[in-house]
Length: 342
Image (cartoon, rainbow, N blue to C red; front, side, top):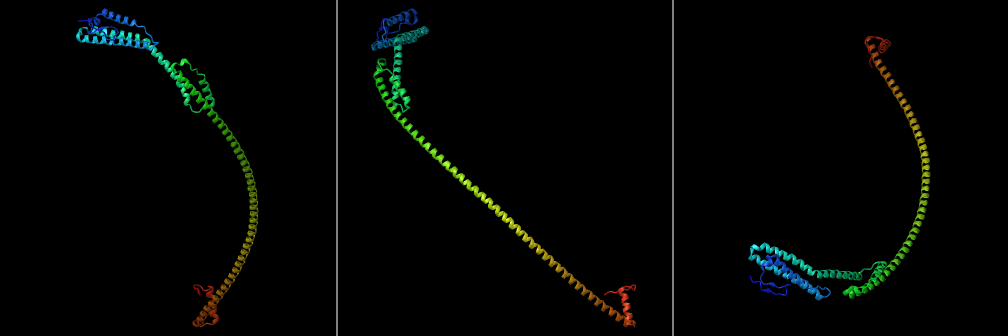
């Protein structure tokens, strides 16, 4: 294999053969020789991060190491197609190349990486401090005491060369923040004065309303007591009137009851007298009727007796006196087995 033809690409840290050198990937000593050349070439560079040119040179050197790595890796890949038997060795060398050159790349780039990290931290710190100043510009109105504390904090911030490229923006932001805080303090103090005045007016109004309410309450109490006294007097008068009217009613009721009792007694007496008179009249009428019945009966008996006497005189050829005696005996039941019925 022709290994004299080399690649002089400026992307590589050292010149490499155009075609892969088998020994580089199969012989540890050959690889170490190549690697030492790369390390030597890297060692010739003195890193300088203080200038852009120096930083660019570091980045370029790290890039060349990376390109050398990828070139060698590509050459190693081509060998695996040609010599399958050497695949394991080539792959191991490739891994070694990748591992060492990655480490070398990081080592080469470390000054720049460290500088970038520090630069990012520096810029972030300045930006954070600047944002802190800018945040005061959009503040709403707060209590004046709190705003004065913020103004003191902002005024105490020193803007000098330590702010680096942020100095101009920091000076403007601080001036704006101080101006805004002063305006806010003026506004807050006016609002607080207005609030105190409003609170004083509110307190005076509440005190006046309280006094008026107390006066109304006292007047209401007095009026309530007056009305209560009037109601008490009215109630006493009503009770007295009702008692008097009740006594008069009860007296009238007693008089009416006595009169009613007297009337009822008179009525009872009259009814009793009338009843007695009626009884006497009834007795007299009954007596007369009885007398009349007796007289009628006597007359009836006399007629019957006379009829019987006449019949006995006619049929027995006896005297009327004899016939009368016979009839008298019959009526008196002196003749056995003979009943005389009228």
